[in-house]
Image 1: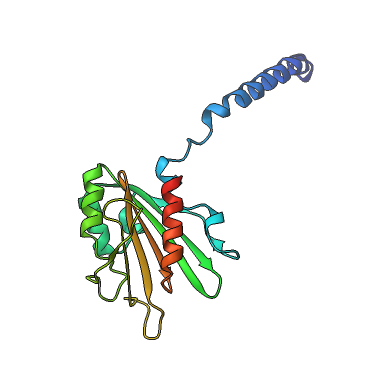
Image 2: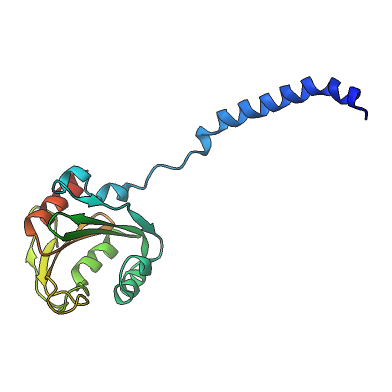
Amino acid sequence: MTIHQCAGHLPRLRLLAAGVAALSMTALPAQAAPPPAPWHALFPPARTYPHGTHLLPVQTATRADTLVDPTTADQVTRLGFVAGGVQVSNLPRHAVASVTVLVFRADRDATTFLRQDQPSALANPATPGTEAGGLGAGARYVSGGCAGCGTGAPPLGILLMRRGTAVVQILTQPPDHALALRLGHAALRR
């Protein structure tokens, strides 16, 4: 084919390219990312945290060992873990908080985990907790020394609660019972 013969096909190629581009633009909405899973709403909104908090992005996973320690991951996996996520925040005055959401196949699995969980982040995981009123059956708040933080580290406060098939763990260091409850109530209202 000579250059003159190709020049005759150029307008048709331009029309074809324009048509393909138009079709791909109309197909983009159908290929958009799926909406977030309902459990994503269990992460408290930024306005719930104290002024000056730096929230890191939510990290999601379908493997429990990427969200929790190995012992807890084994237990969660046996109970039918499906997916989950964790969001860490740097609070003012050198404090931190994290929200971990673990989703199970069935309500009974989430209930079992909530009842049996002894937070391994605590130096004494069997530390008894106190009932966290208004946050559903089995919700409790536990505080104590930090297991892996070394000597002189501030203790931890952990709020554990459940919504449907999801268990939510809110950890604050140093313990901040009021903040944990505020984040817990905000998570359940969404």
